[in-house]
Length: 186
Image (cartoon, rainbow, N blue to C red; front, side):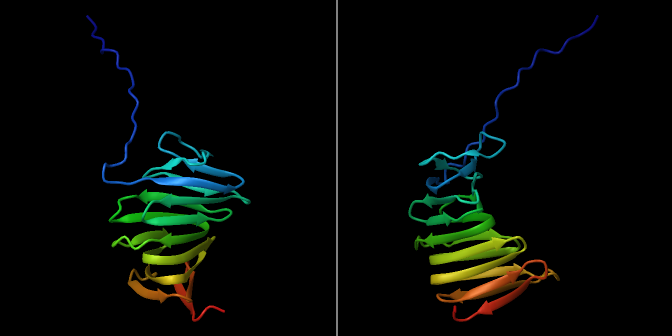
């Protein structure tokens, strides 16, 4: 006598964001913009006005420009060849991961900082406007208005924290974890 296993049919597995998370809205300003959503396993053409959920990413091509807005918290303007992942969209603990390109962050004073992870650096912005530019293994952080803190773990695994205010920039060589300051911007 042989026994057979009951037939098992696969059920779809769809991740839903936690109920405490917020969502963003995507505006396409110029040319091609793609989005990696929860329902796709690769980047697809983005939809103007489309929703951005926790865990999703947006990317622009060599001529693309897009704006991702999380109402009341941040507006991120992605210039050409930029990629941004929305790692955590909790309003009290928001973390975005900038993978490449130049992105301007306009942060509203919500009472909580908004954080951006880029290479081995974590940037915390309470309010104001900052530009982060990631090119290969180099990056810069420029403060247009307001102030921010950024932290970097050096090659000896020590964490260093700096403050930047309006009109200042930090250039970071990621492989050596070296920071160079430009005061004031020229």
